[in-house]
Image 1 (cartoon, helix red, strand yellow):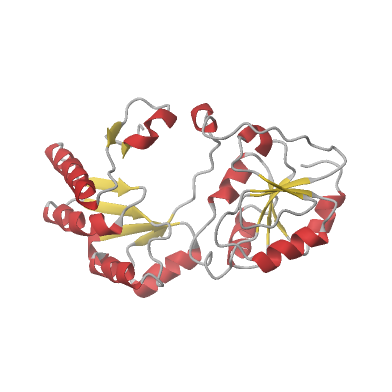
Image 2: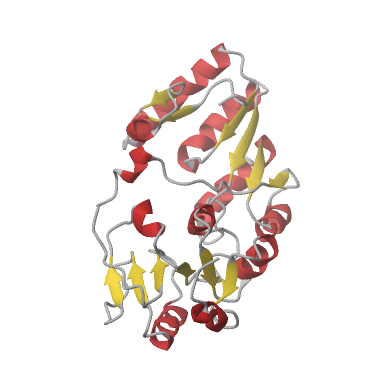
Length: 274
């Protein structure tokens, strides 16, 4: 908060935010009302003579038009990129090309940095993804399902819901039948050593021995999984298949990132987790 004069968030998440010095706005389902809401924010910020704005995320359909208004007022606009530059989404990719000279982009990986420089511009920088734990309010979102942990077994959480490499996933599960796996995706087959959870509170996250992320390498070449950083916040080992994400994160968090093929046997033989 101390680094920003104003923080503006979607009103829907107000009850999960502990900071009281925040301005909230209504983010409507209707695209025209959504545009109207963002226009009100624009007018408010201009009236406060704001000259620099950081968007934590953005809806390109709406932001596309507002960005030109900011340009007219000489407001510097900075965007944090998640999956908003996906070349498979050709129309949105084209719209992003049109606003290219109006914004500065922030990305989380070197692959994404090179991607932006190649297809967009040099107005891009790498930042670190936040490493934070859930607060008490956010934990109330999740069901309080109790899991009985068998101390003789390792427990590994597989929180990925989308963009899963199922070949690697089932190969890993079938290779370690003595491990209990907790999964959050309904697409994963329920096996003898697999338990499905709708969601997970931090009291369960604290008890698991590691987190396995069977990421689709082609998709995660230009994006990150927030579960890596959530796991690191709880000092959990993060098991990854070899690929872009593994190569990038292993250099940064060598003590916590382990390979699903090379390091896993040593990890499983350890009686205690570091």
